[in-house]
Length: 343
Image 1: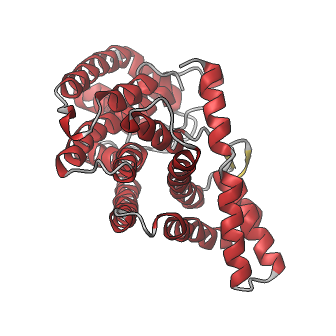
Image 2: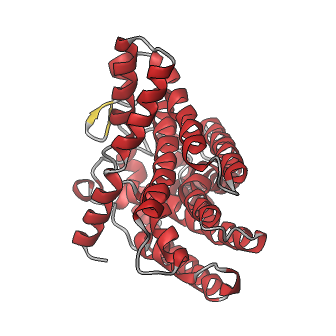
């Protein structure tokens, strides 16, 4: 897929969003929401949901197209698949609004974070972003045979992601052996379920190909892939060029339970562990940790991990039974998007 093709795909996907916000605004009108509140709520949807990369939402549409098996979806099928994709983006928006409050972040997508504009009412706005998923799901999928299963999926994945967030927030203090297990759990629950499994599972439900074997196979592969994605994020936070990544990494300064510090802790000798204990999470001391990462050759350790994880994923994907409608292309497409990414 060329950059131009991808851009066109995102533009077509983005064109659906205004209709969905209009649907929600109609609901506000039905409730007789005061005009000033109504305006702020619409602003909330556009500011927090629109303007990102839309990877998760577009993945719903791409997966539906692959499962459908034809050259393209009809206009109606495309709209419904895109609507599901935007529901995933609404979940993402909710998580980011809340995450920014908890982290005290300053900017999001080049703009001041929502809570800095509206205060702590942003917490309620985050809840509204999530609740709107179910208003839209009811409007467009109430008659779909898998409506209840899609509703349950959104609820379960939200719950799993919030558990992952809770685990991430408890990883404080100095690096230690307990962080190894916590990192894997957090990567899967905070990232993999909603970023990887949710888009594909929704597409399987929409296309009526959600046999239990298909869902289980998808989950097995996509959780592995999501964990790989999170480990990539941790690696890029330290080693990527900030001008390419679009931000300066802060995992060391913020004392994050990062894959890199776990690997460093695991292979360090006594003196090297002292360097971590004295500098990790300490303002202005990140250069000491970065120097240790180079000394421990964490670039090579990551490259070795990536090679083996990608090989493992390719092996599992190659064994997929396509007789029930699941397609290997769904997973090779996902893997192609993230393998060797630089941002």
